[in-house]
Amino acid sequence: RTVYVNGEYLPETEAKVSIFDRAFLMADGVYEVTSVLDGKLVDFEGHAKRLQRSLDELDMRAPCTPDELLEIHRKLVELNGIEEGLVYLQVTRGAAPDRDFVFPDPEEVAPTLVLFTQSKPGLADSPAARTGIRVISIEDARWARRDIKTVQLLYPSMGKMMAKKAGVDDAWMIEDGYVTEGTSNNAYFIKGNRIVTRALSNDILHGITRAAVLRFAREAQMEVEERNFTIDEAKAADEAFITSASTFVMPVVEIDGVALGDGTPGPQARRLREIYLDESRKAAI
Ligand code: PMP
Image (tube, rainbow, N blue to C red; front, side, top):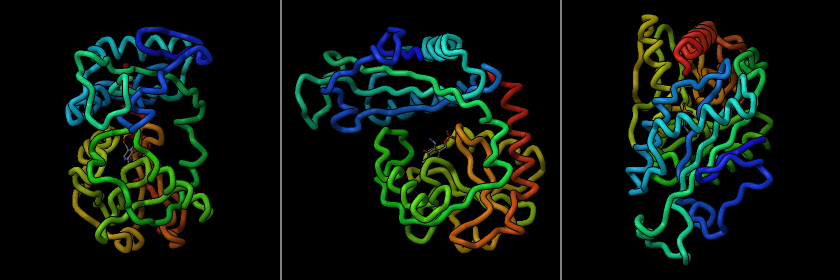
């Protein structure tokens, strides 16, 4: 596999980053994951904009322009022959000469830019989407700036392990009695014709898939309510689902051992997945 590191396309075994890189020492880095369908990028513009926002919030320098980023994404997709899969991008504050909590002078330390692809045939026609996934609820013990897409992913990773140990697929996190989001996705339930999901704030990541799906839902005459909700409300719902760049719209069929509806993916979540995939394929670049 060919990867990209700071201006160079290299075999993955030859790619190197300094041990002094601040992402390695302090999780001082941000990332994006863009899906690839039919060899094309889904919602690249959304990801590029959110990347810029993450960089701005952390006073981090952009490594290059959005056009250059697009070029790198496309070249890697082509070099690695990705028809369906993901492009992972990470920008870090770079390798400062010493380990110091204070940010290094951006004039002296250049950001690190790394990209790689992951081929995932069957991403769109996923078996999990046919059966739906099961989730448990866990405490949300992350930091308070979840709107910034940092590589500080230890707690979400622990959350996935809690789910795995419980024999299910994922975990929804709860703070002050309300669901924030999934470990790596936004969380929704459907009651009647209404989709409920938490409103945007610093408490959750502003999902690129979320924005698109809510737009498509409104266009399909579904009602959308962005507000706090409890796990009990979700358990009593007709349907539930998650969204992310790597799962698109994924039906949730069980929460904390409680089956939703008849325990199979609901019609509205299935329809939203279809609409999302159709529209994304059409708009991919
Ligand atoms: N929330 C969290 C915590 C995530 O990690 C992700 C995916 N990285 C999402 C939501 C979904 O965001 P997107 O639709 O942009 O992939």
